[in-house]
Length: 469
Image (cartoon, rainbow, N blue to C red; front, side, top):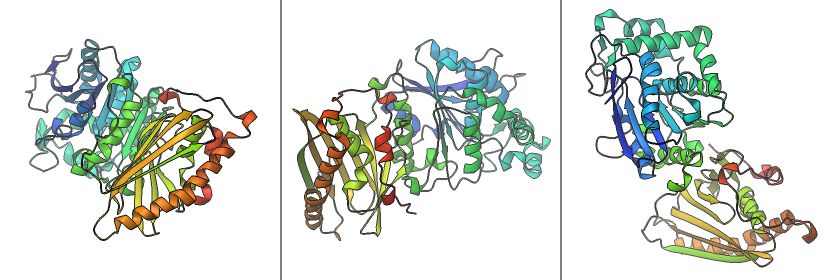
C-alpha cells in the first residue's frame, strides 16, 4: 500500500526483477489488478515479469480492497496529480531506469495525461494505451451520464451488481471521467494536453470489435500525443492476431497470451534501456517435428547485403503471392522483428509467418502462427566466409493427417533448389553491384538505430503485394 501526499491510499502489487526495466500497469474503470494478474495464474504482468521486467500493478484509491480514507477524495484527478507522481518517486528510489506506463481503457487516458502533465518525462521510457479513448459514448451521451452520475448511488457506483466489472467505482472517479470526456468532446481539451508527450514512444492497441472504445476513438487519442515514435496497432486477424479482439479481450482472453502479450512485450524490449537483461524470444518448443529440412549456400555478396535481401525481398524468393500483414516493431525496419508475412497456400489456406528473431546481420528466425502446417519454425544463419557469405537455412514442421508431409517436404526442397536459391543468388549479386563498388562488410549495428536502406525498401515487390481478408 502507498500513501500519497494528500493522505489517499492505494494498492501496489510488484513482481519481476527489482532493478530491471520498470513497467507500471494501470487498470481502467470498474477494474482491478486481476486485469493483469489472472486469478488462476498468468496475465500480462506475469508474462512481462518472466521476460525480466520489474512490474508494478497500480490500483486506484477506492478499489482493490483498500479502505478509503475519510475526507480524502478518490477520483481520477487524485490519481493524476497525487498517486502516479507518488509511484514515480517510489520507483525512482530503487532504480534510475526510466519507466514504461501501460494503461487499459480509461487507465490509458490517465497515464497519457500523467506523462503529459504530472510526471517527470525524463524518467518515462514509453507509453502503451490498450483500448484507451476518452471521448466515448458511455461517458458523453446524456442518458449514460445521467444514470452514472445519479445521486441515488451514493458515494460508490455499484458496478459489480450491474455486472459492469469486478470493482465498484467511487462516485468522484465517475464524476471526473464524465468531466474529462465532456471537456474533450466540447473543446478537445484532453487532446491538447497530451500533445506534450511528443518525445515519448507511444504504442496504442485498438480492437476492431470494441464497442466501448471504438478503434477510431483510440486512434484519435494516440495521434493527439504527437509522438515521433508512435504506432497504432489493430488487434485483428488480418493483422496476424488470433482473433478480432474486443474491449477487454486483449488482456483477458486466453489466446491473448500467445499473440497480444508477446507483441506488447517485444515492443517494450526494443525500446528498453536494459535490453540485454530481457528475454524477447519465444521459449523453445521441445516437442520434435516430423519433418526437417536444411539448406546451405555460399553467396557472392557481403553479409549485410544478404541480410537486407532476406529481410526486405523474401517474397521474391517464393512462387506465391505474399504481403506484409503487420509491420515490425523497430521504426524504419517494417520487415524486422514482429513482422507478419501473409500468403495463401495453393491460393486457398491463409498462412501467417511471424519474425521472432531479427539480429543483424547474422540471424533471422520465424514461426508460423496461422495455417495448415503445424509448428513450423525456420532459422537462417549467416556468417562471413572469405569474400562470400555462407547461409545456413533450417526449418521444421508437422502436418495434419490429411496433408502428406513427405510430399510437402519434397516439394519445398525442389522449390528451394530450383527456384528460391537461384533467385537469391541473383538478388544478392544485383544488390551488391559490381565488385569494385561493393560496400565493406559491417559486422554490428545497434538494433534500436537500424534504418532500412532506401534501396531495399524501394526495391520491395509491389507487384507481389496483395491484401487478403
